[in-house]
Image (tube, rainbow over all chains, first blue to last red; front, top):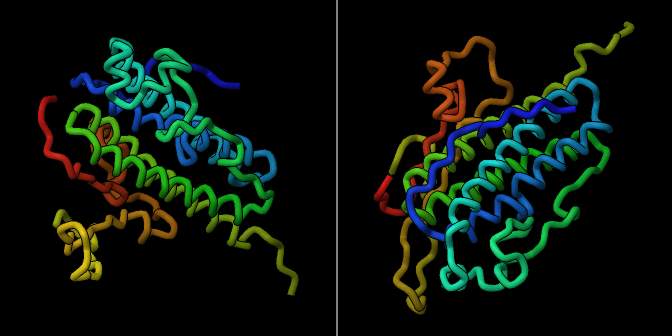
Length: 189
Length: 73
């Protein structure tokens, strides 16, 4: 079970009316390397991974939901007061027709989220290497998002999220090292 | 450019390229790439600073400047 804290992991401030940026940020909401994919990938892999790294997957998977909330907050703030005309000018006309200004799990290209984005091979090394790759891809996405806006407040939150991907990648690499080691196995000579 | 985390490379420039060439391209190699397993007792940021930076560990910190000029805030 989870305990919910009614606050964001890191403050989200948006200082510029820019629905265009909402369209790009949605990549980290419902895209292949987005926070939803990350959270569901890790929390699902937990069940079939060696005990020593289950806790890590739980912790990081949980934090990804906190990141998902931050992205959702950014998208909401950027679109809540946008008129249909403004949304259309930002390239969000098709989104408006289908969803009004509701959030939807889709990529920046409008492709709905799919479970095929996440993998569970059952092989611990294969799964952890996928997780490392996912973190590095999310880090890259955050870089390109930071490059796409001149709003320093959004940049600030995105830089925090980018740094978290680096830390997560580090921890998954350590998990691989833990599973590679045979320290605890009994050796009979 | 930036700090020691950045690498540059030079893509081939053809005389037939349609757009003005970007002669130098950059990518970042974050510090986690050089730490197989984080050692114990590394130096830490003060807590408020760690919260802002997204990591407790200077050894894992990777700044990323936007390629856009910043304004507002």
